[in-house]
Length: 243
Ligand code: PXP
Image (cartoon, rainbow, N blue to C red; front, top):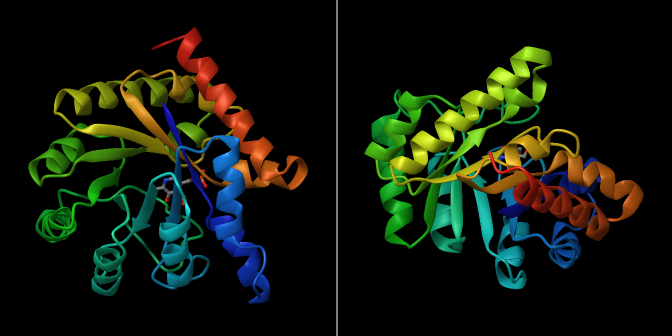
């Protein structure tokens, strides 16, 4: 299983002072040394953390694939077409949200998303859609030519007790369903050192994208060690209890 490390919050700290440090490009080197299989950044419409400069430099400097999280806004799509990240994950975006709150409604915006997927794929960019774990959204993603989906794990992360078990079961069911449809299955949002293992043990999920928890731990341990610890948990879950 691959681990994509989301570096948005490195840029968040930089932007609190509108200065040059810490730099997500430097952080990417440490994330790679810790075992990151992919670097993820979200160029938000309001550019509140990651800037065009970061994405350009990351594309030029990192050795692992770059995953660009992006909305379907025209100028963001144009930028992605020029930069050509290895993969793009399309996410919904609302300006007032603190972080991405829900999955894309692929059914409602089928045509617009389909057009964006076509443009990105023409440039050989792999396209994933960030969706809630719902079969109808998975079917719609397949219908409009997505290469894969990223299952929004936020509901699982926020739930407690029996609800958590139900959410996990639902993620598992949707991952199986999506794989059967030929989609590559990723997952992310709200995953932490404490809740990652049950998700990591779902066989059909091949890539996790994790940001906040890793960057938070890195304040104490350093980023290389924080990424290494997350990788170890994922690898352990994969070996011990495949679900
Ligand atoms: N995946 C997507 C699509 C996201 O938008 C985010 C948040 O930027 C993440 C994964 C990572 O979430 P977290 O920071 O909660 O680990």
